[in-house]
Amino acid sequence: MAYDLEEQEQIANFKAFWNRFGNLISWVLIIALGSYAGYNFWNSHQRGKAAEASALYDSLTNAAQANDNAKVQRMAADIESKYDSTAYAQMAALAAAKTAFDANDLKAARAQLQWVVDHGNDEYKAIARLRLSGVLLDEKAYDQALALLNGDFLPQFAAEVQDRKGDVLVAQNKLPEARTAYQAALDKMDKKHPGRQIVQIKLEAIGGTVPAQKAAA
Image (tube, rainbow, N blue to C red):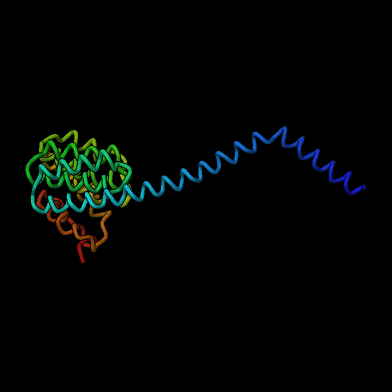
């Protein structure tokens, strides 16, 4: 009998607890299960989007190899609008910028590179800013090019930034500043860096001297 009374008391306590907190617990469970289901759906959706973007990117690279700039630009815009959350969108924009540049379509090249600057991750942004500064250099927009290069870059791009600064400063006939930039580029380059010898040539061409200890191996 004592056991029955104890059991009844436990049931009564449970009912009281459930009456007080049952709705809250139910909603917490519903939210948790909904979040889990949503997370699984999102992952599946993202995998599907990445696969679709990959297929389109393959087609874009084929069009780029065929030098079909108009088709490349259309496909890049499609990937950027539909799959902007994937890396393929950034890759497509960079590929489209190169195709446009090769076709002397500097307006399209600028637009594609700016898209990456606005939407890409830090590495892609750095690449896009370096390439965009090159387009601006070709357009003689020197101040805009330097403004881009004076922004924050990841450390691994430091040498390339200084090299491009040197190019812009040479175009402005600011040779002392250009020598400083090229020397800074060499200081930041490993001796086995593939671009080191070119920077040395550019430095020496404007009257700079490459220190012996900085010479390429």
